[in-house]
Length: 347
Ligand code: SAH
Ligand code: SF4
Image: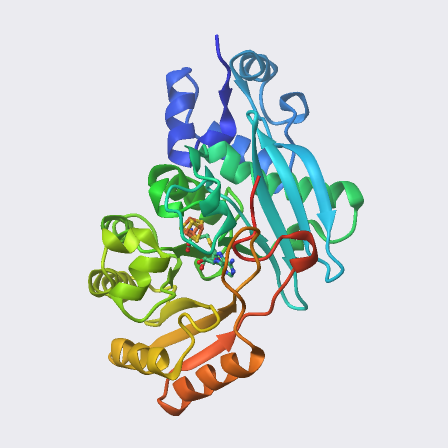
């Protein structure tokens, strides 16, 4: 019989699982405590679990993490792992800063949306990641640091961003379950303000998310009008800017994590979307929102004809927005030397 990977279960499903074994449901809390608080993956070391149940768990279940295929270290401190998940390869990126340590995780093997500037998009879509493969990326990295003994256990990772390979909202169920485990007090206990989900704007999933989870949501807008956006992001032929913004606004109204702010990512592609005209359209588009824009300098992708906007053009764009009361930040490029920057993840 195939063993169940306990990393696929949030607390509610784990409680149901233990009830189905004829056990009491609080065993779920104990097991989660061992896994996510004590980082103990060996049933036989879980002292407050009866011997009989430990044996049962050993026979029926497993706790299986992704396996390391490659690791790369950037000169700026970023670490990128290529992980083997059930024979597929994905990438996970660790981005240390002074006051936070962010893990950028993947949700799919590849991506079906084919944005013209993105390496993941170029590789096409293979499959959705399971909950255990999403959660497993975090545990894997915690174990990496734990084995190195480099920091205090709970501070290895302070923030999670869903900005790795794939479109998180197209793997809705598993992403939501993973976030539940991240937020759970018996899970990783992350605060909801510390989890950021980036989406290209899957309208029905944004509305659906309202009923499930409150986290920080950010929109990869990248263009100020539908004609240009459809050219660089084919998904815009299905969901148009106006409808995406309406859905985002509804989510933000509901959510506490976003503090009423619409978060936008805007890639800076030289002479494609970085003109004054584009900035002006962006201002008109967003004038009714309280908004924060992250300007992302384009990262070079093999076989793609775009070039990066010069710093001068980015600053002009940013200043023009500012004069019109829209605040933007220029995202620092991290991990470029090991192809770990936004959009460079590819296997
Ligand atoms: N699929 C989701 C999340 C993963 S991509 C999304 O698209 O939002 C994370 C961010 O990197 C997105 O804003 C994406 O548009 C951006 N990105 C993709 N390719 C890039 C590139 N070559 N240079 C800079 N940013 C890129
Ligand atoms: Fe997919 Fe995001 Fe890349 Fe677009 S930018 S192809 S949605 S991973």
